[in-house]
Image (cartoon, rainbow, N blue to C red; front, side, top):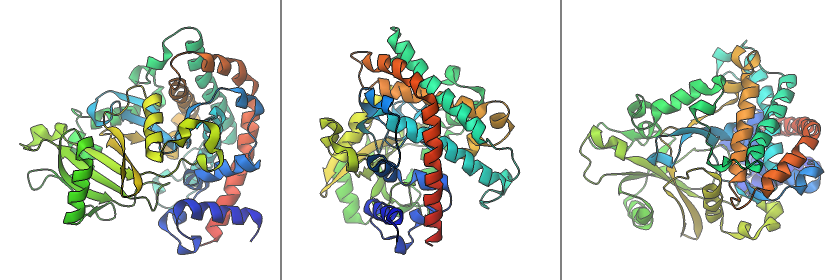
Length: 437
C-alpha cells in the first residue's frame, strides 16, 4: 500500500469507525462518484492542507479568522425557513453547520470552488448515463470546465460584493437571500420550499414533517419507514423523553431512532422527536407539530489538524456547532441547543419543514444552467450567502469585510488553478476507493 492509500485508509477509518474491508454503505456510496466521495470525506481536505498536498493562496491567510462552515460545497446550500420549523420565511442559505468552527475563510472558499468542478464532472457522468439511477438525465446538456471557471469568478464576486456593502456602512448582516434576491434559475426550488412551509399547499404531503409521520390513527405518529426510522424500546423511549423534554417547546408525542441518514455521518446515533400539542385535536393542529433531531455530534473535520486556531474551538463538538450556527444565521433555529448524555455530546435542533436542497443536476444540467447562466448565477448566490454567514461572526466592526475587499481580488486566478488541481486529486482518490470493492 502506497502512502496515499495509507492516508485514505487511515482517515476514512478514523472518522467512520469501520474498516474499509467492511464495505459499509457510506464507503460504497462514496465510491460511486468523485462528488459524493468529496461530500463524505471532509477530513481528507484538511489532512491535505496540513500536509501541503493542497496549497491555499497565501494572501487569503491574511484575512481575519471567522466562523466557517467547515464542509462548504454546492449541496450544503439550499432553501430553508428561518427560525427552523417555527418560521415561514423561506431563504437561500448554508444549510449544514455540523463541521462549523473558527478558522480560515480560505477553507470554505476553496472547498466550495473545488466542489464546482466536481459538480460539473458529476453532471457530465449523469448525462453520459454512467449513473443508472436516473436515466431521465441521460443526454442532457452539462456545464463544462470553462463554465466552472466563470462560476468561480462569479462566486468570488458575489462574496466580495456583500463585503463591500458592509465596508461602505450598509447593514449587510440583516440581508437575507429571499425571493427578491434570487436568480431565475433558483426560483423553481424556492417555490417548492414555499409550498412545503407551514400554510403552503404541499405542507401536509411533502414537508419534512409530512414525510416523517403517519396520520392513519388520527393522531400523528412517526412512520417507522423501513431503513429510515426504527422504534426504540420502552426504556430508551422513557430515558430519551426525560432527558430531552426540557429542550423542546411542547409535548413529546413520539420518538424513533433515525437510521441511514447523511452522507458524512455514520456510527453516530440520532433520534427524531415528534413534538406538538399534548391534546392533539386534528388536522388544524398539524402546523403546531414539528420534528426535532437529537444527534450525537463528532468533532468538526478541520479540528483534528487545526484545533488551536481559536479557544472557541475547544468547546465540545455540539456546543461549538450551536455557537457557530447562532452567529452565522440571520435568524437561528428557535430550537437549537446541546446536551451531554451517556458520555457523549448531542446536538438538539429543529428539522425545517421546507428544507429543499441542491443536487448537482439541479444546477449543472439542462439549457437553463448551461446556456442561460444558471450555474454561474447559482455560484454567485452561494458566494453572497456564504459572505453573509462569515460576516455575522463579528458584528462589532467591519475589519473582516475591509480585508476581504482588499485581498480577494488578488487571488481569483490562483483559486481557479488550485481548485482544478485538487479536483484531479479527488478524482484519483475516488477511483482508488472504487477499486477497493
